[in-house]
Amino acid sequence: MEKFQEYLIQELPPTAYYVPDFISSEQAQYLMQKIYDAPKPKWTKLSHRRLQNWGGIPHPKGMIQEALPNWLEAPAQKLSEHGIFGSKIPNHVLVNEYQPGEGIMPHEDGPLFYPTIATINLGSHIFLDFYHHLENSNDSKDNEDGDATNFKKRYLASLLLEPRSLLILKNDLYTNYLHGIQERTTDVVDEKVVNIKFCQSKLGDVLTRKTRISLTIRHVPKVLKVQLFKKK
Ligand SMILES: O=C(O)CCC(=O)C(=O)O
Image 1: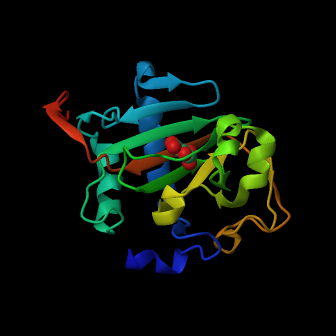
Image 2: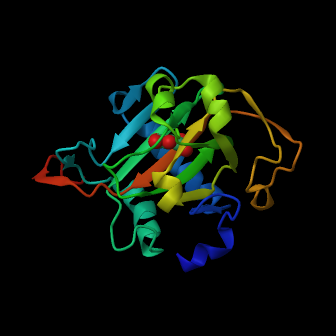
Image 3: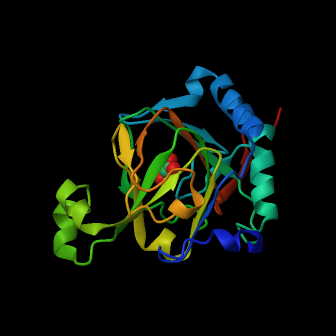
């Protein structure tokens, strides 16, 4: 992790690192090509994004593990060499694709994962927004499912994720805060964007979203012994 110390985001609760230009344009293109080469049934269409699950489906009883394909194992390996997952090796990758206007509700990633997320960003920029958890149980009854006004009150700050960057989230920020992506087609870079010094964009820029892909790389500790598919 030492390598990333200069990219620590001091303005957020511990711990977030934002690493610009983590991969080259060629590597980004290669990953995009592999993602779009995947057979159609590999995509799961949700109402506001679509996704590919690699490595298995995380489950409280344990994930039935599938070997990651080589094109995903290489970046996963690179990340674990940096010590991002402690001594753990990432075994799960979620690919999310967002069209302009799409996003993901504020949420936490929960206990099925080792509490560190590494995200490689491809295609378009996006804003990842952070929110406080609900402070009291009265609120939680009616609003944990996403009342917009309530989230406005709980909003903390945003990170601008530019293409080819790496984001690492862990510790308090993973466990005690929510993250989400608002459904917009443009984003205005304002003072709530706390990683701007690492970005190409400047304060006041208005950015138009294009198709964005994220590779969310994680470690699922609980896996079942059976292995469904051998690596090709
Ligand atoms: O696309 C992203 O960067 C966020 C994805 C995310 O929050 C998730 O998969 O849980």
